[in-house]
Length: 151
Image (cartoon, rainbow, N blue to C red; front, side, top):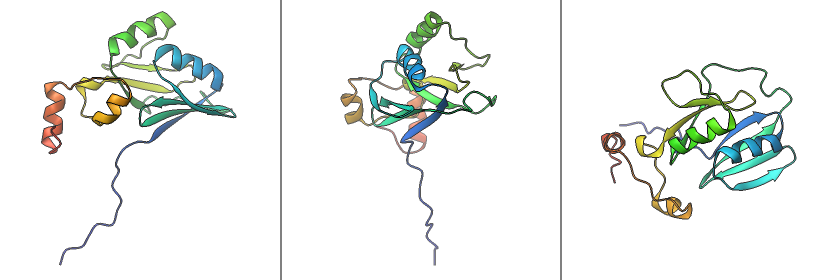
């Protein structure tokens, strides 16, 4: 007799929440760097749309007080070179990593990766709804195929 595993499976991330010192300043910082819509606002918070996911930026008195060298979230973009130019224009320093890491004004570390190069995938109908036509690199397709998730 086989026991069934009753643990729920992690399916994805609905949103990432970051502490910021000022929601309006955070909105200006992130919308200057990224082409995104405002999903909503509440007292002391702004929510940036990423199709079927969002980034929640919430005011906190302790924002920026504790900067962890390793804690971060990975953000997938369609055009990392365009972000590189925007970061230069905004005077945002990159971290000394092999990747494409930077910190926002409150010390939140963001690791940027190109959609084409990672196994993370948006459903075709979500990409269409976002007005995007993106493809994957051979290495990303190989990662997906190893898991039986090839298109």
